Every structure is written in C-alpha cells, then in structure tokens.
Image (cartoon, rainbow over all chains, first blue to last red; front, side, top):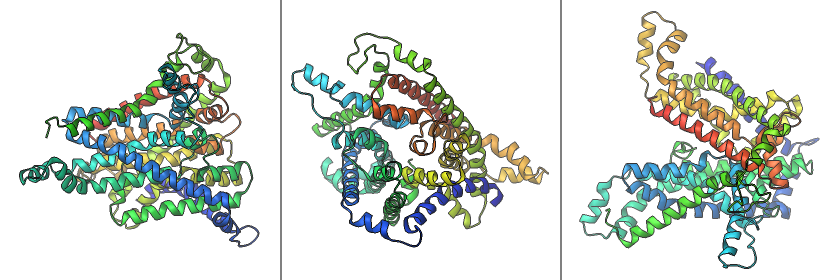
Length: 270
Length: 261
C-alpha cells in the first residue's frame, strides 16, 4: 500500500514540502544563523503596513462575501429543487472561469472608459468618470467576486442539513418568521458561516493576481511583497520571512477553526 | 413558508442583484471579444472577428497555447494514475500513517499559492528546472493531485471493497482484480478528477509567473503580462475561448460524476 502512495507522495514532498522547508531555512540562515529577516518584517514600516492592509482587506472581503452570500444560500435552500439547482449553477459558473479572465472583465467594467462609467455618463448621473479601479475599491470588488462561491457553497451545504420541522415547530409555538429565523435557523447555520468565512479569509490572505492587476500598484498585499522581494530586489531572505509569517498565519487560522468544526467541511468545498 | 411577505421580496431582490454581480463579468467578455473597437466601448460599435484573427495569427500566442495544452495534457497523464493509486491505498490501508499522508496530499490546497510558487522557484533554480517543460509539468502535477485524490476517494466511498475480495478469492491477483472489478466502477470519478486536474493546469498562473520563461511560457503568463502593460481586446478573444473550453470540460465532468461513482 505504501508503494502505491509513494509516487504521489514523492511529488508532494519534492514540490511543496521541500520548497516550503527551503523558504523557512532561507529565512533564518544566510552565512550563519540570523533573525534579521524577521526583525525587518516585524519592525519595518512597509512590511507592517502591508500585513495590516492584507488583514483589513481580507476581513472586509469576508464580511461582504458573508452579507452577499447568506441571502443567496438561504434563498437556494428555501426554494424547490429545480430553482435551487439553477441558483447554485449561477453561483459556480464564475468559479470555473479563470481568475485572469475575471480580472480582465473587471478592468473592462470598472476602468475610466469602462462599461459602468460609460453607462453612468450616458444616464447623466456623473460628468467625470469615477475612479473605480487601480485602487483598493477595485481590488475588493473583484476579490469578493472570486471568493463568493467559497462562501455560498458551505452555507448552502449546512442549511440543507437543518431540518425544516424545526422551523415549523418554532412557528407552531407562536414565534414570528423573523424570530424563528433568529433563534432557530441562524444559530444552526453558524458552522457553515464559520466554514465559509475561514475559506474566504484564508484564500484572500494569499491573493496575488487580483490585487496586482486591479490594485494599481498602491494596494500592496503580502503576496505582492513576497513577489517584489524576489523579482525586483533579489531579497530572498526577506521574501522567505514574509512567506513564512503568511503561512504560519494561515496554519494558525486552520488550527483554531479545526477546534470548532471539522476541517473537511472547510476544505471539502474547494 | 412560501407566502410572499415583504421580507421575502427583499430576499428575492438582494439575491437577484448578487447573482447579476456574479454573472455579469463572465458574460461581458464575449461581446467585447467580437467588437471592432480598439478600446473597450460598450455597446460595441460593430461586430468583427479581428481580435480572434490577431490571436490565431500571432506566433507568440500560438506558442503559448501549445505550451498550455501540452502541459495540461501531460499533467493529467501523470497526476491521474498517481492520484488514483494514492486514493486507493488511502481507502484500503488501515495504517495510521495513511491519515498523515492523506493530509500531506491535500497540502497544495492549504498552502497559499504564492508561497508554493516562490518555494518551487528557489528549488528549481538550484536544480536547473526554471524555464523548462518538465519543470512546468511537475509543478502542475503537484497542484492537480489533490483534485484527483478528492474525486477518487469520493468515488471509492460508494464502492464495496468486498467485491474485489471475491475476485481475488477466485484467483485473480490484486492488480488484475483492481483493473477488472474496481476501476470500471469508479471510472466516472477518475475521469472527473482528471478533468479537474486539466482545468487546474490550464488556469494555473502564479507558479508559471515564477518558474516559466523563454519559449515555455503558458498562455496565462503571457496574458498576465499583457494585462499589466495594456489592455488589448485580443485577451478578450482568448478569454472567451478559455471560458468556453473550461465550461465544456466542467459539464463533461459533472455528467460523468452523476452517472454513479
């Protein structure tokens, strides 16, 4: 049996365990043991600002995705099967569109001469084009778009398992629909909320393409810090330290979440 | 619960708006790709195929397309058997280490891809695999493995291993009984896993940005560079083709998965 897993395991060891181990080593060793890279990451302004911005954006994206995703999952769950399949298909459709293609689409929609600006000017709502892209706004709009399916799917999966009888029981005991929702449905859907939020938050922490293309160089997320240190400045030690801190943050989040819900529930949706 | 209360109407409206937000960007690219305008104008002034012509007539785009398709195909051919073998072993073995191995095989989904990309770049730089075809294929095999493993493990869950025991008790060896009894029953999940690995290799961008170069650059890398420099509607044409291709593949995979397995 071990012989059967060995080819796959070998690929994983050679191409993800070894490279990540190498990064960790490189972050603490350069002609001798050093913590200089980590000192820089934790004290220098650019690094701090980038980590803070990345966490802020990830938090904002997660909250927006939850606010947008919950009603859709709720509606899909409450409608007859045919309708819920239609809604879920519309949710996963963009999922299978390349992230690059969607970045292009958002540029086409949001830029100064883009569809939305042209439309608003045509309606005379605005006289000057709005700056919708090449900033944090554009990054957030496109990132939420990419991560929303990761929120809706676990929410829907969890809601499906909530027995409808419970809601009827609530109603028969005299609770209004909104009260039954607040006291019965919402609490029971919380594992799905946690699973969706974890996946969206963690994926957002490592986002690269969308902020790079839609952020206009001003929204420097941690992933861009890593790539710039490698490509522009040849600062391999610093890049490695940033990567290690990012990875440890992600693993810490998974670890904390795994104490509340099974990780299969979080990862199963990807 | 289906009576149309005001709260219900609000729910319908919000959900409809969210769905429009999800779908609009996917739909907007096709009209741009068929537009004659040099810059993005909407609605398009007139229809034309000039961006498709530019794509098919450009040797750099064609070379990149060839690289992408070759990498994706080789990825499937390597990742599928490796993933099937691993999933089979994980589902059959009672060794405790298998749980750890199972988790290790899902690592590519957990580690942020930018970290994987930079790590692979450093390792490849040492062994001379940067800007090579084998380097690109291997990286995509690693990234595609979890999809095969997850899909096949799901297929094996509804398969009764006793059937294979019967075949073996009738004198088949393990390998033959696997191919004769087990594989035909989990075929659908194997095919689905392979298709997902193909799509993942076709779409992969970030690792390619770091480790590919020269004549071995996939489409996504060239598209990324083109998008960073200037927005050319040729990319809309390529995007439309890519989207159509991956939709067809997903449709194929999902009909496969529904047919049992």
